[in-house]
Image 1 (cartoon, rainbow, N blue to C red):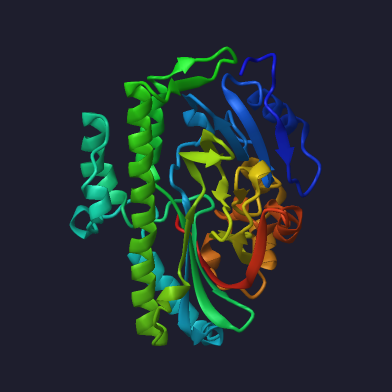
Image 2 (cartoon, one colour):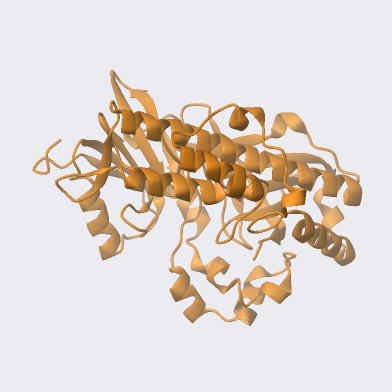
Length: 379
């Protein structure tokens, strides 16, 4: 598609778009080969392509439209205990201590690395330097949470059953994969780096995206097992396995829509095909939702991946003090010693997730509402 024929763009927004976001979206729809754009209600400004953007191409791949945390996503697991077991301050404190000791933020000690699953180790990346990175950073960061908005959260559903929600991704490996393939991209007419999907370079990128999604999913599963062990020891809790939900929201994948095939790029947007379960988290201290997709073709079968930021991290740090964060967290357990460092994750730095769900009623149905009981974020 030429730059003179902008792609159709469809919106599901919870509030008026900022001028900078609107301009960024207008630019995206004019990129070479972009055939369709869908904007989710959690959309907000980011480098090159806004978070909350879905776009479809026929021949070109845009690494910037996926981002660096390839395969970042959610794991939700139910447990067979009542969430009131977390009301005890001593128990909550012990669980937070266990999480901080057993799930690092950045990397593990070489002697405490976790085994990666076969679906990761049986695949090779496209370049020797990337495979070497797997043996170093990939190994040491597997089973780690990361910073920013990544979290381990214990929640209660409407029946007061205890749930776990984990948000994390491919850690340093995703960033390395993005940088490696951007360096091999060609500038399009609108000055965005792209790869031809049929070329060796394009096929290499697709291979590495698939690997990163497997690594990220395995990373969440590894942390899920650690949390399950902690809850088993502290609460005598067991996982209710059939209830587990898995999804990711940063990827590019070949999909059929109508009678056409597209490379669907999702950056901060999760798949929402008919019947597909998903997770829409709020923020620290606010509600989250389990949903099921309705298969809306105009959205390229996609959904918001969360509340979405209202304030940038810099704006949030300027707007909120440590005491503001503590007040906004209410009765949710977290490590108060980190309050100053977590100001950019203040609940009020995010959009109202209830309005996000309302705005995308055409895209997903709400299955379950969850309220936070305990939140662990790594520094």
